[in-house]
Amino acid sequence: MLLKLTGSILTVFASTMIGNLYARKLSGRPAELRELQGMLRMFETQLCYLSSILADAFFEISKSSKSPVSAIFYDASRILKREKSITAAEAWKKSVEANINNTSLNSEDKNVLISFGSSLGNTDLEGQIKNIRFTVEQLKIQEGKAEEKRRKNEALYRNLGFFGGLAAVIILL
Amino acid sequence: MDLILRIAGIGIIVAILHLVLSKSGREEQAMMVSLVGVVVVLMIVAREIYKLFETVKDLFSF
Image (cartoon, rainbow over all chains, first blue to last red; front, side):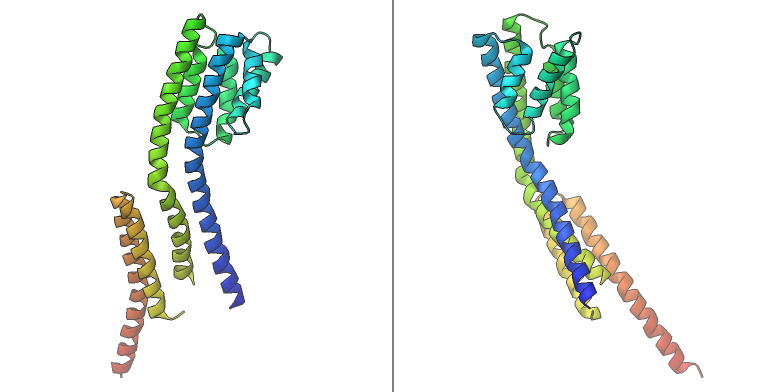
């Protein structure tokens, strides 16, 4: 009896936690996209008024936040400093691919980020700034979509986890 | 657990899942959950009906 009770409680607890995990991933994405927009704006300022070199600019930006997305900037800066023969686009792509799994971003966001990197360091200041603004616009669209998805599905995943666990317990008991 | 209690529990849980799913615009999955609930309950009940038939057969087979 006690064993059954313990097992049931554990099952319900585990499935509730799984539901919470999905819900948190859903709510983390809009926040991270907002964070990224802020960072890109900061990058724009760094280019415009401070004229810092790319590795230093990335490093400064990565220090400004504790969000998981700042690791992308940090790694890009480290790769740029370590490997002398690498282009900015390659370093950025490498860093995005290494860090995307630690964030809540999906493959669509990843494509936006990589296409931002591909014209990094190819044009003059004007072009760079246009590229940054374009990326920020796109991230804003993604954020809207992510917010919509969160609103629709966050409560759903929580409830689904809990009640799914309850159903499993009742069927198996 | 008591048979009736178990079936009632499954019914309530399935009803709640159906409500939650259809509220967030996933009609197909809500339908699927209801269907699975019906099948599970049917399987439980089928076993009991089998037992009933066996009992009846035993009763009348001299």
